[in-house]
Length: 212
Image 1 (cartoon, rainbow, N blue to C red):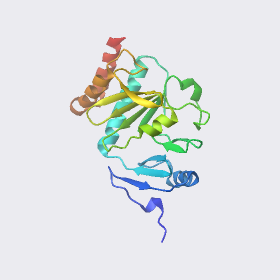
Image 2: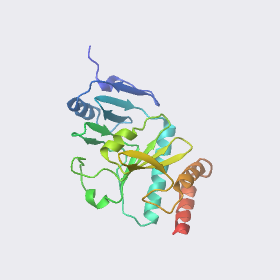
Image 3: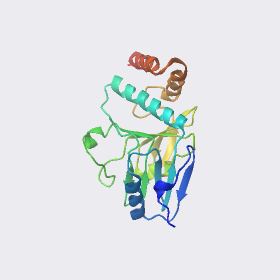
Image 4: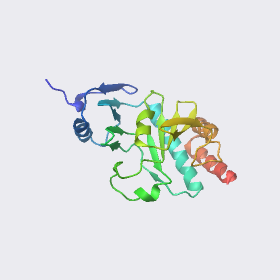
């Protein structure tokens, strides 16, 4: 009996690896699974990973993403958030769904596009990965050419930039070169747990205004 992927239940925090998956099969699986799902996919070297995130993972993703959006709004920087959009490149035979991603410097190049193709469109300027389940795939991000990768392990935020095909940890984000975000983002994330979302976001906006 042949099982459908929709019949396989992946517990939160766990993942399934499928090997010898062709590019054509990968695209068929994407279509079968659909866009309205809670799993994340990563594809490279004919191996497909399907991961089901933990609630803590999703909460951190949403809050850090909202802090980043608030930062961009307060700095009056145009941006295009694309969440966990599937990014893939057939020539490179790689595909990935980030926890969150943003077009910033290349926002105008993708503004209003209903579909993106990394064979002709630029990759996101910044991608966010929550590494509580050790899921992130910096090698795929590097192959796709994503310039900046944020990785949060539940306590610490690492900011990495793509240099000569590899990610190097840096102290400051190239998109926000004067702000100590490695320290500040985890601080305000923790505040949400004790002070609430609205109060924390308001305080963060005030902090950004004081830096301008």
